[in-house]
Amino acid sequence: MKIISSPQLLQEEIIKLKRKGNTIGFVPTMGYLHDGHLSLIRRARKDCDVVVVSIFVNPLQFGPREDLKKYPRNFKKDSALCKKYTDILFYPNVREMYPDDFLTEIEVNKLSNVLCGASRPGHFKGVATVVNKLFNIIFPDMAYFGQKDAQQAVIIKKMVKDLNIPADIKVMPTVREKDGLAMSSRNSYLSRQERGDAAVLYRSLILAKNMVKKGATDSNKIISKMRNLILNKKSAKIDYISIVNPETLDPLKKMNKQALVLLAVFVGKTRLIDNILIRR
Ligand code: PAF
Image 1 (cartoon, protein in one colour):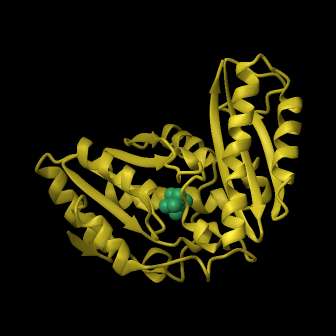
Image 2 (cartoon, protein in one colour; image 1 turned 90 degrees about the vertical axis):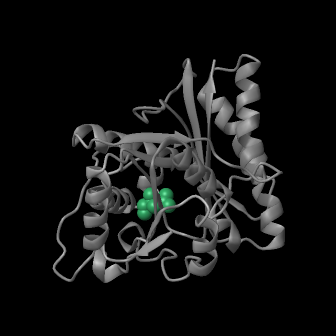
C-alpha cells in the first residue's frame, strides 16, 4: 500500500493507472476506521482494480462549536487496518487541500438545508466541496458511502448527477454493533452509561418499522411513539426525528411505498444519527 499526501502526486499516479485501463474504487473517510468503513473498502476491492482510501478530517464540514479539534484520530491503526485491501492511502494535510487562497465551495441547494443541514449549517457545503475535490484528484469509477449518513449519500448522488461527474455512487448498508447501534467514529465519545442508552436509537427505528408492518401510516403518530421511547433514556435529547421521501428528502405526512425514517439524537454531549428505509 502506497501512502500519498500530495494531491498533485496522487492525481498523476491515478492518471497513469487509468491509462493502463485500471478501474478505480474510492472510499473517502475521516479516519478512526471501524467495520463500517472496512465493509466499504472490502466492497471496493471486489469491484475495482485499484482501491484508494482517503483519510482527511475535513475542517470545512465542522461548525465553529463542533468537535473538529477533538475528532478521534489514529493514523497508525487506520493504515494497518487498510493495508490488506487498499492500494493507495491518501492522507493529505489541511494546507495541501485548502491553501490560503482557497475560495471555491460547492452547495447542493435545498437538500443541504434540511434535517442535519438545519442543525449543522454549512455542514453539507463542506462535505460536497471536499468530495468534489477528492473526486477531481482521484477520478473514481466507483465511490462508496455508508447508508448511515443517508442525507450525505442523497446529496452526493445529486451533486454527481447535476455536475456530470462520471462516478458511480454505491451506498452500502449500515454496519451495526450487536445491540443495533450504528458504527460511528463518534461512538468513542460515549461513556459506559451513554453507550448503553445509545442502543435506543436503533430500537426506535425498529419500533417505527414494526408499527408500519402492523398498518400504521400516520407519520406523526409513529414519530411520537419513537420520541417517547427515546426520551425514556435520561442521557438522550432529540435533535430531530423525521419521515421523508428517500430521494427528495421531502417530509411525508403519510407513509408511502418507501419512506426514510431519520433521527439525530444527543446522547450526553454526543450527537448520533441513524436511519431506516421502510418499504410497505
Ligand atoms: O462521511 C464522512 O466520513 C465524510 O463526510 C466524508 C464523506 C469523508 C467527507 O469528509
